[in-house]
Length: 93
Picture (cartoon, rainbow, N blue to C red):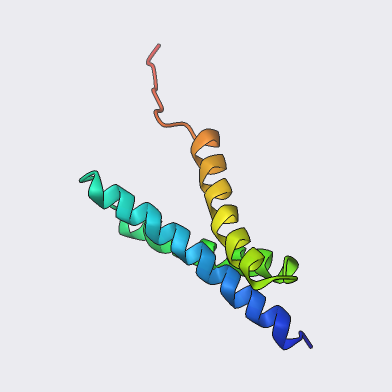
């Protein structure tokens, strides 16, 4: 069974991921951008999951766990934005 220290680190990492997702939503709202609720909820779920995993891996210090959850979610979001096309144009022949 996992130790209490690793579980706490996973929880704190998840909170770090949740903080990153919330920051992104607040930034979008401050720019008067609309927020896609389903995208936001998926982001929250993935942030908690990734943050928890990274928090458990980097469980040596609770601050590192929180930071890894925050940064891990940020990296995932940037990879997703760069990998997915922003426009798709279909041409007729």
